[in-house]
Image 1 (cartoon, rainbow over the protein chains, first blue to last red):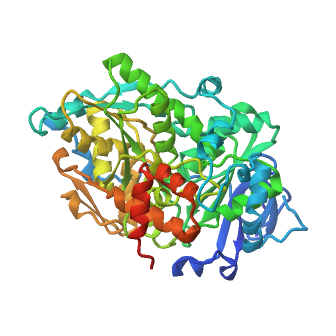
Image 2: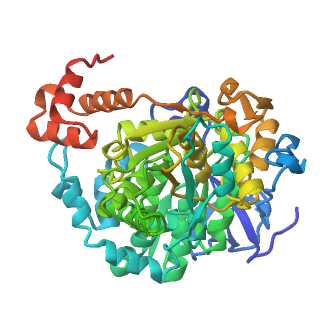
Image 3: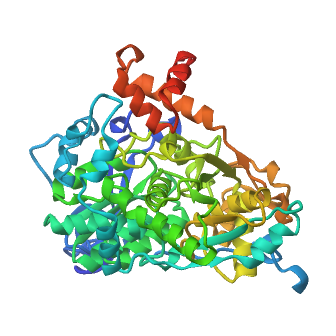
Length: 94
Length: 474
């Protein structure tokens, strides 16, 4: 596997609570899932994807977790066009 | 960041809540608490030490406040075209998107961040999936403080709500650390852990600082309407979720002397969807301003991350309108196409209710929509509707009354179909009383509790006594 270099901007994941450790009174579907944290930061030592690593966040705090994504991006958009919206409010112009 | 000697289990951290809150806020709530129900609300609000003048000055330092109030002439005309004779109030909108970070939440964040700086905290932390995160991050950037925002972002499939992704982006753009979490109320557990291990200030949405910061919004609305129209607004419509927007705005209006102005709450109806359910998480097209927050927070405000909530909506609310997701998307689109303002989404919930109110009100009356928010990728109605389709929700044009939260979004064909519906206020008040009985057995209530409840429900003591006598507990 490829080594990811120290200092690379990455995203890690850590299970904060296993299903049996979660809050009481959760709905059934939520209760069977672990409670998971994802956080981005600068990798503190060379590592491979999936390794247990330490990152330094934008405010300089260190967090540990499994290396999940290299150079994470947001990827949100305006989505596929919803034609039903296009004609709203055109009035006489349509 | 770790505190190796402490028990970090869910139960142990939650049990340290009061201790953590005291250290992270510098407020000892025990000073104000009188019983499991009653506390001295007004003294708590007073003793935060900030006057309205102080707040306006602090907010002006960090690009907050004095936002424009626009008349929506084309939308008003459109409503008048089908309202009955003499009906069709003027609709005004306060363009709160003009605040630093793009929403009214900057008002709420500004005083907390100022207070954190004054008390020499190294940073601020807040648990919020909404615009508030960007607001805290933006204010912290200006005041030179570190910032941590905790957000509920993705379901167990790893799929993120696009609107919350945009909010993660905004927070990181302002230099904050963003902790992205899966679905669940343990967001507050993670907040407590974070506060305890970092020693940061708790920029909770529900402290007196958060609520007092919104009071300037109410004052500005009063002053701007008077200046332009020579009278007070007849109604102010406020998107309602946790109650801070409504409480702060109403307190500001009252401080400015608008004691006849009708305070109207409005939420998107998400009835039937469970807020802590993993499978419902991405079946919602609104991440806030909906009944999933609006109703529980109105009927028991003290369910928050501070011992007593400064946001107490039923204390000020005269009426509560519900609208559907499709109605809000329709009106959001009209705001762009007819008024040349691309805003939204949650701020337009109150705009949608204003259409219904304006239709019922007289032509010479004024209804104010007291906020807008910025829009963009992830937040935009086109993304929310396409995301709904990707998650198996039916989206179609038709009669909005056929809307079913989590199943069908019906976009109205014409503005006349935007009618919303009214929530039963007495039912809400009774539900609050039921929660009060659960918190503190009725036979232990004293005169102070009755007086507190009457004030908290905008009723008199006789009403409370009559109402509790008919409550059936299940």
